[in-house]
Length: 180
Image (cartoon, rainbow, N blue to C red; front, top):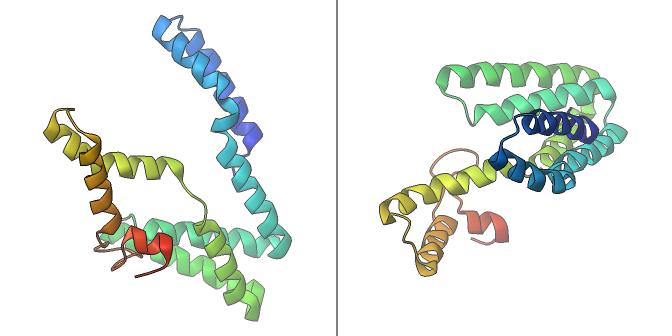
């Protein structure tokens, strides 16, 4: 797992390397990024706290296996047919290994680990998803878009039902409120 400290060090090194380019446009952007460095590493601090909490509950070796199983299950939803099967096999393999270590507690601990890891918001993927949804509308409007149009796009995407994946048949607003 990448720690907050490691990410901060890597970003600082990257910023120093970019500053060495001595480009005015880069220097201005770097100044802004350096002032927000603490904000950039917040998700890693959150992940570290979740990791620590789960490690206190789940035995170390089994925890590593459950995390790998969760990771491959997560990739199943993004992969194409051939890769999907490979990720499913990997997930099943790591779950079988964890079950061998945990015995009867496996289902309970698997649910705990999977639910906790699913609760982590992957901000970049969320931003990219929103950009991907809005981009066709922005391109068709040639940048001349009103707040009312944005509100209409937002309403449509919050109320349309997912056609596939683990959220199939649900709308984002249903997932948020818990009401159909």
